[in-house]
Length: 202
Image 1 (cartoon, rainbow, N blue to C red):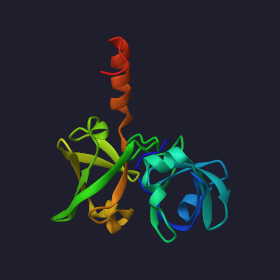
Image 2: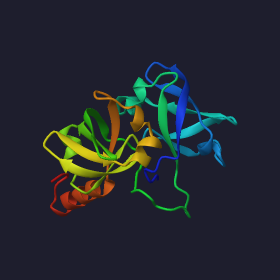
Image 3: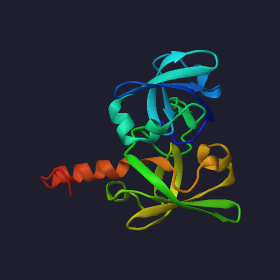
Image 4: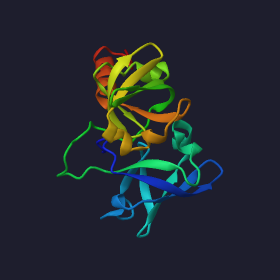
């Protein structure tokens, strides 16, 4: 489990492509502290298992399903990524509950400045938007953000300067793809209500 509070920006050192999978080698520092093989690190919001570790980098395998559902398939050497270690049992819950299981991808439609904040308008599929509510939470490339507006084909978030500086949002451009994970509470409620009404979905 993660909180959507980015700990550091890492850099892709190498991408080893398999037939339908990939292996990432990522340079980092802070997230390597007390980390061991088998631990979980969220990379742009995707929970990956550390399979190799040195003093300056870690490696992780990415399966076919993950490559299909996320923007990790587009990563290349030199690309910057958001990194967050799994939450410690005695840690602070600064964002919201983020599982690291990406629901899909969105595309940045517009980036506009509003005084000291930056607005991002992100287009998404209806399967994702049905769980997005105004003032609710959503993880964008692993960043816990509050939804400011929702329409039938996109949603908007307002990002403070600190979040911009501490994440890869500062290098994002219109047309870029981002990973999206809905707040899991809405999905659980839907599933439970469906079971209560005798249907899989409602």
